Length: 227
Image (cartoon, rainbow, N blue to C red):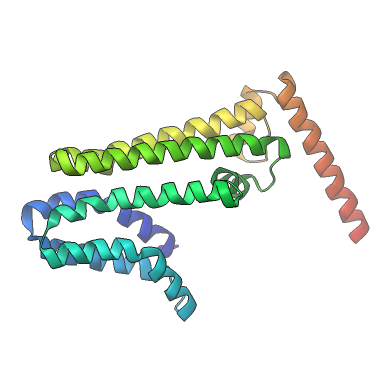
């Protein structure tokens, strides 16, 4: 549980740490604090094996390198580029998932739903493309704010507005997907959606119902054979 909390917490709190450190610490001191916090957040996710440590080093080397360069040059402005680097990494990850498959949104949907009807897969690919566009624009905007805006504006966007936009996009996409396909599970949110937007009311919803019935029938037959 701690491992799942610390690393996201580092990224969320990073703009605030930089903003306040900018006013009270020298660049090398601020870089040292950030490097220590980042190392703690990353290493707590490691299981201690050599292979796992090697993977962590490869994944996080660019970010660590950026912090080390800021410390070496005694330049706190370099630290402002870290959110841009993270956004660029996410953009690359989403884009690579389109080429290598499955698309990132399909992976997220499967992690939540467990089972996805085949007719939802083209939609997942289109949404992944939309997220690539969002991440590309976000990366460019952070770069512009880093180079041309006061640090207050940079901190407001990277530490606040970005996460509001992220929440709005995620919530809107989930609600739209539920409304569009009306493929519901057994969770509380799905039960609420099924009351508001009955699957029987649309052709896409009826297709989802047919898929769900066929899936349950296959599972029942498989269970009977196993018994």
